[in-house]
Length: 114
Image (cartoon, rainbow, N blue to C red; front, top):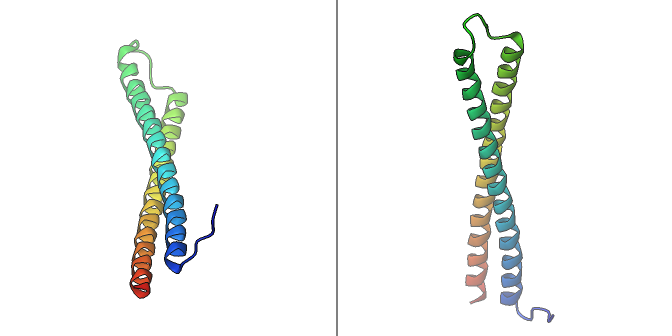
């Protein structure tokens, strides 16, 4: 592989590497967000099924402390997932902003080279 010869080629090489890295990070974050969203929907569905199941059970059955504990755990887990999703979205926004800044810097450097 030949080494870049001019400043423009160097800039293009750096831009390509940084853009590739940012795109990989964004893709990873998007995949993690999809995974978390699926898990969240599954937990939500599971919670709804549990909420419906006491109605289908015999009238003398009362929600056991175990179910209450499981519900509390599900609520806590859902809260943690929402927080994690928020952090991922914030991180993705930071990366997108950083990418824009890099593109702006690259544009200014290209103008200087012209």
